[in-house]
Length: 442
Ligand SMILES: [Zn+2]
Image (cartoon, rainbow, N blue to C red; front, side, top):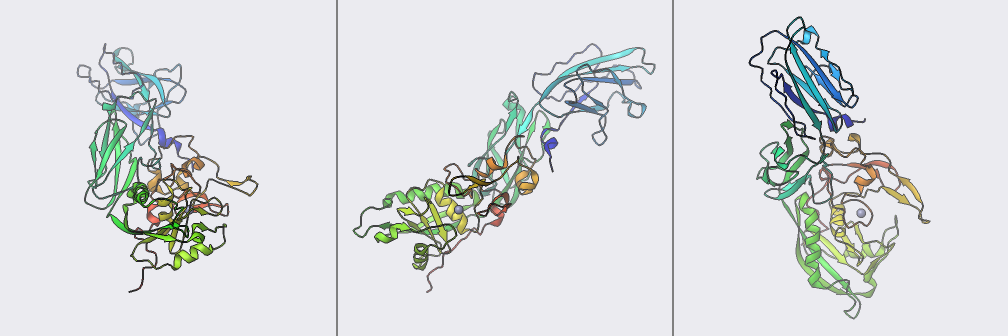
């Protein structure tokens, strides 16, 4: 299904103009205009023309009925049929199909159409709204813990709408627009009530549909015990103990939007040269991870082993009861592995064979049936945004990528490790937000 129309349909209202008044609307702004008609007699006949790019604008007398006129470069006066004759207080509606500019002219005559009683014209322009519910971390998060703040952003094409004409609005009282109230980006605060909320905007008097769905969560704390694996002589550590808090903080930056906070309980320095290297070949159980799994968990949370290297140039690895992080990890690695511990899976935009030749890839642009409806929202993604590009934004993207970090509401279509393009569990609704690695039995 292709729903691009929904991306760009916007309505504005104009009413009839008295004679000798000409209304000019600001360039590149799609504006609501009220043109009173207090001096004209009742019971006239309306004629309207709309000039502009072919089919760029459509005129309706009722938004539930087909359009009565579409724009063309020449444009001609169109007499509205008797059934749609408008009295002097009625309205017409202009629909824009693409960012464009045009002219709407209007003539109000007596019944014989002989004497124009009044005329008016407005220039109009429309802008495309771009709001991406799956964005680059940390913009537009799908989830928020109670009381937490996050940034939300939209773009306009063309961009020259004054900030004051864009007003943010909460869908219900679970989130609040904090500051600023107007402009292309804002800071939103989650309240103290959990559940689904949302955010939208009013642009030049046009109330847009829900742009961002926001799930407000009860915060969870996940305890972490960290092992730093040094060589047999206590040297060659993958990182110093003082660095661990920074790694935890980086992970928490991303996990915040799943309302998860990692809490560092203890750091254990272990001297074992063999343990500094984790064997890993895709599809084959790692012997070393098996050994890490067997280490008793002194806490009720998760176990993380910082090591020097993991096979296959891997930055992070998790198994049933432990996580390993190598020195080639970046600031997204630990959060990604915790995502696995919460039950999420990897997603890929393409796969390569041992000769580095692409063997499978995701093609085509984003569509509503390739993600959860909450992540599609109003569908105001850029028209040319590729699904493969969207996948790179996700925390559960399976390749090394420092900027990945987005946790969507639900599943997203992409490749699994076999190269099949299927629905992948990468979102909030698939997470166990309180993961546990086999706690030590009392
Ligand atoms: Zn992974």
